Amino acid sequence: MMGHVIDSDSDTPPTQGFADPDSDRNLWERVKAGNNAALAQLYDRHAAQMLGLAKLILQDRSLAEDLVHDVFIEAWQRAASYQPQRSSVRTWLLMRVRSRAIDRMRTFATARNYAQAHTNTEEEVSGIGVDPSAVRDRFQVCRALMKLPETQRIVVALGYFEGLTCQEIASRCDIPIGTVKSRLAAALNKLRAELNPSEPID
Image 1: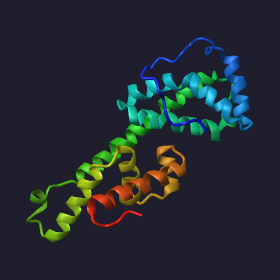
Image 2 (image 1 turned 120 degrees about the horizontal axis):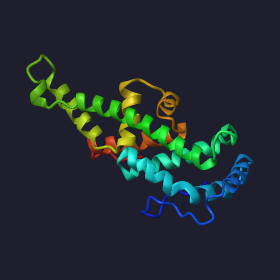
Image 3 (image 1 turned 45 degrees about the vertical axis):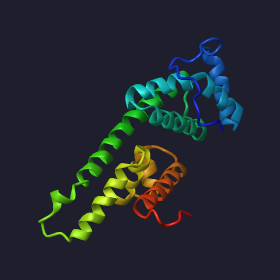
């Protein structure tokens, strides 16, 4: 599988030799047959333009890179779903980026609003009959949560606040379940380090 790195800062992909839809379709047929090298060639051809579109919608390069990577994972796993009579490979990839970016923006907004709504200061929630130690604990957890990268904060919010399973989070965010699990594990390690700095991390 291709590496999760887009080296160029340019949002405009190279064009020489890369505009042939027939060549893209041939590569796609090889991807369907399980050819990693063909997927890497498609990545080299189209990732920069996909990144530009993702950045335009998400306004964050790191989130955009994550999304482009996820779209190529989807392309690898669901190559058979592509219908060449409906669009070119390039169009299919760009449409997946656009759709996923819009979905992700909605999910980010939901998780962000939830986290912010639960990040009251101790002064704001004092005097309402809540155990002060519980208030401090909740405040510390929410403050630690807001320090997480947004992609990690989302899976925590969906898993622990909305009670979704990893499979349900993967479906909601339209990302592989393995990605959900790795982000969740990284988030929990960071939360443990933030809340219990003296506790060794496994």
